[in-house]
Image (cartoon, rainbow, N blue to C red; front, top):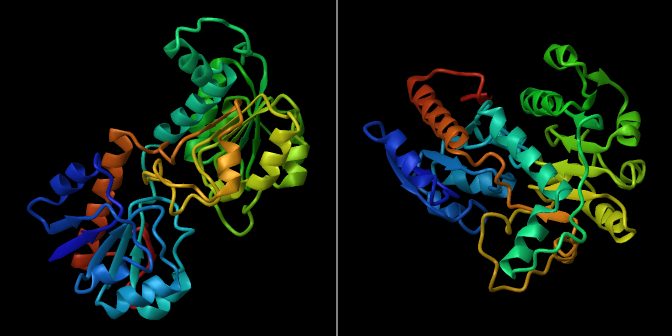
Length: 332
C-alpha cells in the first residue's frame, strides 16, 4: 500500500521515509492538500496531511470519491477539518494528539525575548556595521507579570520557564492546572489577566468559542507597553484590530508565529510575488513586530514524535485498532 503525504517539508521528508521504511511505501509531496491538488490522491486509501491542508467538505468529497479511507493529519490542531462531512462520508480521521510541548513553549519565549530585546533590529544593524544602541533598550522580566491564556501541556511548559525568570504568574483556562498552581500561578478572569500582564502568551486551541479571543476590545484593555505572543493559532487574534493598535503606537512588541489567513502563504516561497494580503503586508512593517512562519513546533524532537505517531495511526488503522488520536472512527 502506498501512502500519499501532502505538504511535506524538505527537513521532514527523510524522517517520514525512514519511519515508514519496511512498513508501507510513502510518496511525499511538497504541495498542500486543497481543492486543486485533491485529485492527486485518487487511488490512495491513506492520505497524510499537514496543518495548513484544506480539509473542508469539497476536498473530503473528492478524496472519498477517489478511494481514500483514512486521513492522518500531522498536527494536533484539526480546526481545518470538517469532521461532520468526514463522518458522513465514512472517512476515518486521526491526528497527533501529543508531541513535545517544549518545542512550542520555548519558541514562544524566543519570540518574547526577540521583541523585548530588539534582537532582529540589532542583528540587522550589525550586518551594516551600525553598532549604536539607540532604540534597543528592553526590560528585565524578573518581577513583572506574565499572563498565560491556556495552561495545558504547552501553557504549563511556558509557565515553568516564566517561573524560572522570576515572574508573577496569571492564568486563564476552563480548568486550573495543578502543576501551574504549584508554581504560584493565580487564575483570574481574562479581562483581569489582560489588564495586569506585562507579557501575554496564547496557548489555547482554535475553537468557535476562542476564535478572535483577542478582539478589538480585548486588545485595547491590555497595557500600552505590553508584549503579546501568539504561537498557537492565528485565528485567536483579530489581526486588523491588532494592526490598528500598533498604528496607535501601542505595545512594546508583538511576536507572531501564526497568522489568521496563513493558509496559502505560510510554508511557501512568496518572495518573488506580490502579496495581496494588505493586513499581513502592513503587519510586517512595524519595527516592534516579529512574524515567523508557523515554525514553533519545528524541532527534530517534536517532528520526530509527530512522524512516529502518524506511523502508529496508520498501523492502528490497518490492524483495526482505535486510539485516542482518532477524531472520526471507521464506520461511524
